Image: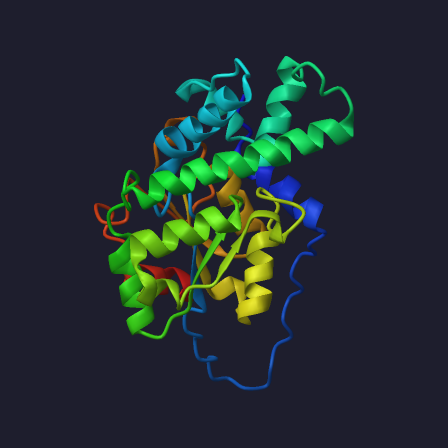
Length: 273
């Protein structure tokens, strides 16, 4: 069963050891404090920038399994269940913990080596698919990013996928000029992956952002939980597996950024709310 977004947020917040915000002391001034501008737009990658999961990562995993001589085949339905676990290496580990590890991989050390080896190969296959133009960018992404960069609003990408795969996807789909302006925080840059808020908190620290003024663009309940646990605003743009997800805690939910009319003005309104 899918965990609800509220449960994920509670778990993520507890895992990160976040404290509830203390009430601010009243000042003597009777004038309202000026509203601060939006701090940044932070995009998830898979499912947000491109709908990569069902027809990108999944077949790449299956190809890596086949090359290794394993009989494992992840169907679209089963892969949707596996997405409840953030991170590709973690996903393989969860899969084999459930169905049993391949013969000869009975020790934690061998299991870890296998997962690392296959994830590297899967990433190479996936990157080849990107380079060949087999994975298109989602509607509305470039328009929103261009609006933000033109207005001086920082843009970052925060993902559980490997840094190499995310960087390649951003550069190929967005072009060098945009990619050079977008910092990427991905893969093992943090120990605890989504629904933990760590990757978003890292981005806030490195980019010197105010979390409450950040707007996160996500497509999954674990990503939603991570953004909310980091104290950020979250817009969900539905991807292929949206039917499995609970987005009750999202600030806004759209089918895609273009159809949903998500421009910089919409993001600014959320950050200033």
